[in-house]
Image 1 (cartoon, rainbow, N blue to C red):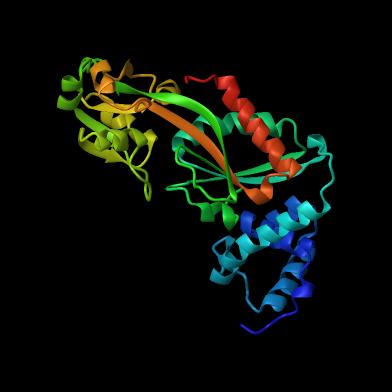
Image 2: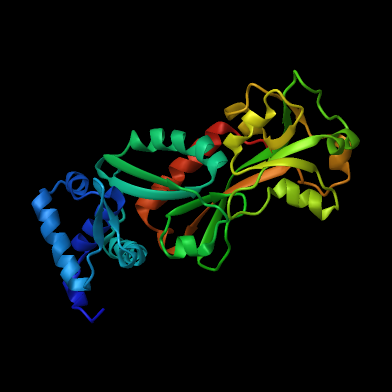
Length: 310
């Protein structure tokens, strides 16, 4: 691709490009931007000429981004953040704010926190567009490249430009079908049982399993699933045991019985083996953005309302 006049690209054009990308439709982007569809099409054609790429191509009733557009979106978001920081004033009025926020989270923290967060935040904002993507194994590049604005994870990435803050602590419990088995009340009973566990795609095993493996203790895991929502069908009507955060039992696994991890198992383990600590993490560039700070505050408020098992 040849060189182009980079000064021909302004903040309005960047916002339009990102909005078309997020909506997958010129007409939907026009409604969101409160613009005529013809004006969006005209501006998009202008950007296509500037970068020398079609950017979007038809796929059924939608349009999809080209490979070049996929590479440009994180850069466009970074530039928009920079422009926003350059012009941001000290005040932030939620009632006048129209915000778009992308959060990376796997299914437990997604289902536990984000529906309540959305309800709370959207009620106070003029408009909120929340995009939730899986975090898998979280990396600092996800934040640096603006693939997401916030990560929620028990294993947040680290870096001089990455900020972390604890949201809540939880504890692992044994969950099982009480009609098929009793609670494993000793380490021997726990290790003699058959287990089902979660291994997220592209992610490490659960912190709990890693802690046990560090002690040379290995559960007899006969089933692995890609997310916590996949546990119930394997627990129902079987003698399998799952070790899950206690809040998940109250959220999605209420039909099953729960019991603490065996005391003699924990006595042989380092302190905190049964603890799950959840963090949120964001990039330094969003630290002083009043809108992002407000959104993070709403998420913290949701976590506080749930209480803390620490």
